[in-house]
Length: 319
Image (cartoon, rainbow, N blue to C red; front, side, top):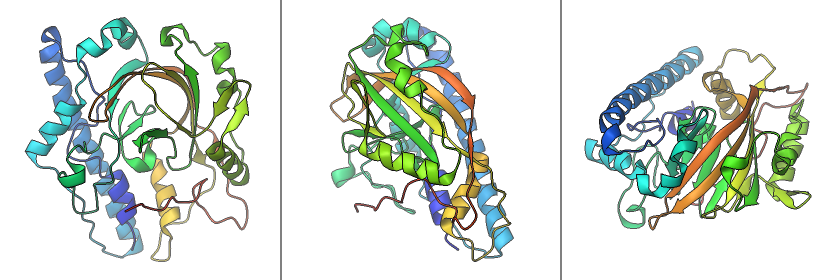
């Protein structure tokens, strides 16, 4: 049975901390070490959850399929954690902002497609690749698997195309991020988006935002080009499913299995602002952010005769 895509996408959290990057000043070194240990524990818990999910699905379908996922060496894990660390000097003017409620900072690196089900490639064209650091979840407030991401980075573009999730960006230009609230007029077009009530509406909206929708002077889309010094509004609608699924069998398709796995993901409707404060030579971007509003995840329902699937067609792999 094809459970590989579930675990390769969701369990490839990698053996690195899933907690977001923290500042490392001399005064906070010990606190950083404690957070790192806690992050490792959180990672282990997430890996255990995904193993239980895979075991549950395999047992219910009586397949006995063995899943193989790539593992990082200790040296590779240490490199990832080191690359994720933010230089305090790069966010010196944002310290108060970062430490305020529902705010933070992280680094995100481009996905160079250097991971397969069995191998993490870190040489040749992949020598600058930083595993498990190309997808971020504002809902989870940490790095996460591609399948459930809010913000992904690849090819010089930010995108938001997680499973059954509608992400919409708005480039606000060089506006101070500290000045924005959920009532700011600049964010009104994002705040006004009404979640879909059913699969047909959600798929139609996803197609529209894939092309881009004009709202006054703003373009609302599920992709945006990140620019150093620019601030972005970001609406994230991570849907729940109103339908009840029957137990999986050997005939259950991969789309339906992935949708079942959303039970283990934190779903919500968020309004977020973020700012790219630095672009590094290796492609890494330092991002400060704040969550302005969080609501219960809306539900969509698959109608009679509709095959359960994501709200957008699967994208083909480039390699």
